Amino acid sequence: MAQNHTRHVEPRNAGARNGSNGTNGKRPPGRPRSEESRQSILRSTLKLLKQHGGLAELSIEGIAADANVGKTTVYRWWPTKAALVADAFSASADSELRFPNTGSVERDMSLQMRRLIRIFRSERGKVVAALLAGGQSDPELIEAFRDRFLWPRRKQAYQTLQRGIDRGELPAASDLDLILDSLYGPIYMRFLIRHDKLEESFADEICGLVLKGLKRRVQR
Image (cartoon, rainbow, N blue to C red; front, side, top):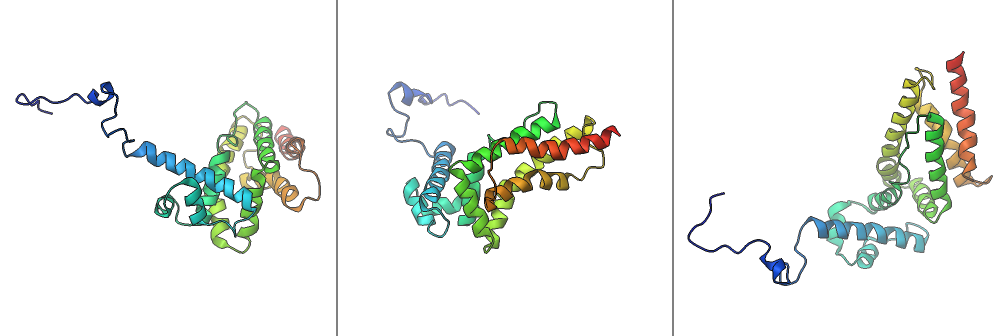
């Protein structure tokens, strides 16, 4: 950019030296504030969903009011209430549900499954229950749960199982979807049906049954 030699240009940080940010003390518009609003909306969604105990009573108007934003701000990021609720839960669990890489596929899966059970047993379990229950009669809701929560973690799980195959812990021709359904299906069943206790140690039992059985097939 050519320099202007005929007029004095105030340095960009002059406002900071003068005790202001150049906008009369107001936060400049842009990404930081937008992200702050987005996170506030996600927090309010979880908070209100836990309070109401279900999706029917939850409204975009209520979420916007609690987050101190306008409805248009909510709709800027989420086209439907279902998408917002699914994103709110997914964001709250993202860091906890990442798969470790310990060098053992059984250990990796067991650790991640234990964390999932921990979430299901916490207050956030009510959010999952509401999503799954509502999704039985609302295709849009169950689709949002699949797209925004289930599939991203399923893709990570594929990578974890593939590392196990590469290390010779699982058969090369393993059906990854069948393995994952066999591992996580019992967790969801105990969570929803409540016919038995859902404890973290249950993850170790499932992995021992499913993954050790597959490992024995490799060793034959």
